[in-house]
Length: 114
Image: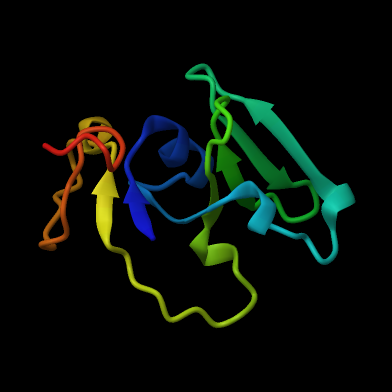
C-alpha cells in the first residue's frame, strides 16, 4: 500500500494524495456493479475507472503489460488492516502538503528512490 502524489491521483480524488493497494490485474474481481464502471485515459497515459452511480474512483492502471492495477484503499467494503509503506510520485506533491511521516519516499515509482 502506498500514498500516491501524482497529478492524476490528486485530481481523481480531489485530495493531496491517494492511498492505493498495488495488485496484479488478475487478482481483481468485481462482485457487483461492474456495469456501472467507466474509465478514461489521462494525459500521462494512465487509466482511471470510476463508478457512475456514486462517482468514486476505484482503480487505475498504466498502459504497459503486465502493469499492476492500483485499487483505491478507501473504497474497499471489507476491513483491511494493511498500512501504507511508502510515498510515490512525491515529485508531483502539492506545495501546501508537507509529508510528516518517516515512510520511504520515491520521486516517481517505487523503483526510483529520492
